[in-house]
Every structure is written in C-alpha cells, then in structure tokens.
Length: 412
Image 1 (spheres, one colour):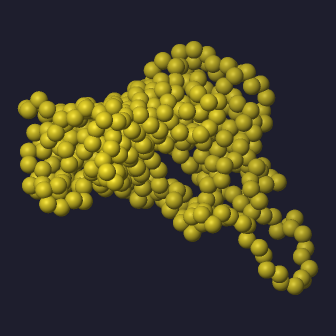
Image 2 (cartoon, helix red, strand yellow):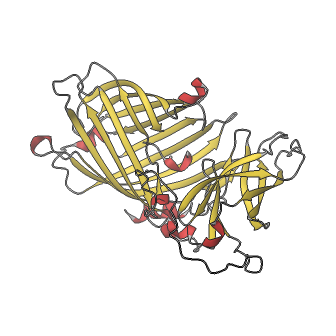
Image 3 (cartoon, rainbow, N blue to C red):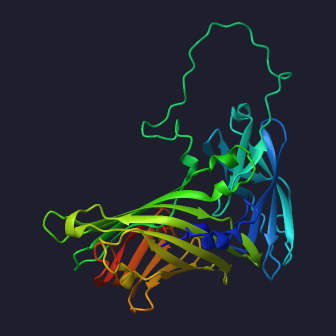
C-alpha cells in the first residue's frame, strides 16, 4: 500500500494516543527541490497594477554550500474562488548565483501577475507547484474606485461567458480541491495465470479541506479523510475475458500533520477503519473489517532519494464467517517501505505476516517516469509489479500465488 503523506504515502484509544504525539507539523508551504534546498512562501503582499510580491525563503539543510539555487521562475498555483489557476512567479531581485551556506537560508523576491478579475474575489491562496506544498492565504487587492474610469450610461448588453469544454466538470463542483491521490493507480499485465491483468484506482477526499481556503484556524478535523480503492483482477486468457475478482475498499482515516525532527526527516501517523469486500454472494462472498494504526517516518538519503518506513498493526472487527481463519494467512502486522526520488526510480514494498502460522505475503512495485526516457510526455510511469504469498486478492485469501506483471501507472 502507498502512504500518500510522503510523496507525496490512504479504533481504539491507544492508536489515538500514538497519533496525538505527531500532530504538530512543518510549515504548510514547505517543499523540497532536487538540490536539497527547501523552498517556502514566507509572505504575499500587494505591489499595485494587478501584481503581488511573493517573499520566498530557501533553506539549505545540507552539509555543503549551494550556489545557483534561486531560479528565475517558479511554477505555482493560484486558488481563487475554489478554482486552481497555474501561474508563474518571476524573480525580481538579482544575483542568481548568490550562495546559501550549509545550515543557512536565503531570501528572494518574486512577482505574481494576477489574472484579470481576480481582485474581485477578496481572498486567494497561493501554493508552489511542488510535492508537499500547501496553500498560503492572502488578501487580494481591491479595484481602486478613485482610478476607475467614469462610465456613461449605455444600453445593457448580454455578456458572453468564457467558453469551456463540455467535459469540464470543475465549474459548479467547489469541492474538487479536496480530492487527491491515495494508493497507486495503474494497469499491469503478466500472462500465464487466471489473473493476468491487474488494475487499480484509488483516491482520498479531505472531508474538511475547505477550512484552509476559508482562512479558518487549524483544527483536528483537517486530518479526517475518506478514501476509496478498487482492485480488479482480470482473466484475459479465459473465454469472454471475465474479471476473476474485484476488491472494493472504502476507508475512513485520520492523518496527522508531519512533524519535522532533523535534517529533512519527519514523522507522522495514520489511524483508520477499512472495509473490504468483493461484492459476490454464496461461497465466493468475501468481507472483512479492520481498524489499524500506522506510524510513519521519512528521511533523506544521498542525492534526491529518500526512504519512507511505515509499520502497520491491524485488528479485525465484526464477523469473519466469509473468510474462516483469514488471520492465519494475513496476520495482524505489516510493513510498508519505499525508497526513491520524486522524478526518478522508485521501489515500494509492502509485507504482511503472521508470526504464529509463518504465513504472509510480499509485494513490490518498481516505477520510473516515461517522459524521462522519451524527453517529454506522455505523463505516465513504466510500472513493474511482483507478488508472492497468500491473498493477492480477497477471494484467494488462503491460496499461495506468485505473480509478475508489467504495464503503466498514473499515480505511484
């Protein structure tokens, strides 16, 4: 399983105690580039003539002085009235090569040109277009009445709305900003088995995500999510190409804010309730409910690589009559580990194990951006997946299988 907190990576009282120890977090505007320099938005102030000045801080957490870390342009997202617009921040101070000492910080000022009509909305949020960045709220400048041209009476004419694609569902859906990836999204294939193809879709929804955009104070509710993952096992070698099994996995969980500990390392925790079923009846019916706690830690490695480790402890709740002795094959413990770079090779592994029965499973996913090989698009990942052990899908929870598949991924 992927833990979206670190790519980013999807009860009882003692899990809540674990999560409460890691609720304090780093700056919400924080992100890290590929030179070990952490970039954050320190402030946004009006300049006039439809522009804003963005104060950028660059923190060097490494052991060496870094030069040339102030780019001429920075990609960002402007959030106005629940709509995201890509924008570019242009550096307005000089000395691009001014070095940032080890353990020190630098400052640069950038200009943001506001889109036409943005000032009529009162408030907006700005975020860097980098993994881990979060919106920073600021007040938009209001149009000046003193400088507005005098309008003479004119006949009222209908105003044409900007054209948009008929398939654009964003207008009228103010809560799309609360959607984000959760586990990996992919399609892989490996011949010679009764589940040759495996497909997965997954997303999470921040139930109170609009609080930050409204400028309301932080709350424990900010970490509450609903998630949904669906795994499909497709028997392409059989007549009529049936799906052998489909696992449906809705989930409700709480994700704490990451807490920085030292030199780019951070910790967090996730606790939740998960339901799994395959929508079948009779002897093929499968259903299981679990509550779990998963403390997580991430740490930088050499270059752009980082390591994430997340042990997981699960407890089965409710009836298990559809899955007799499923605990014998799945156990209560698991470990997720990931090593890789944001724009490079990444290996993610997931294990579960029953120490009493000696049974369990190991899965691994290896991915690499295709555009890095082709010098540009399409924006997909080359994706390889392996599995060995019990219960690759819920129907086969007590069957040992080994699978190797290759394909493409949209989210890893």
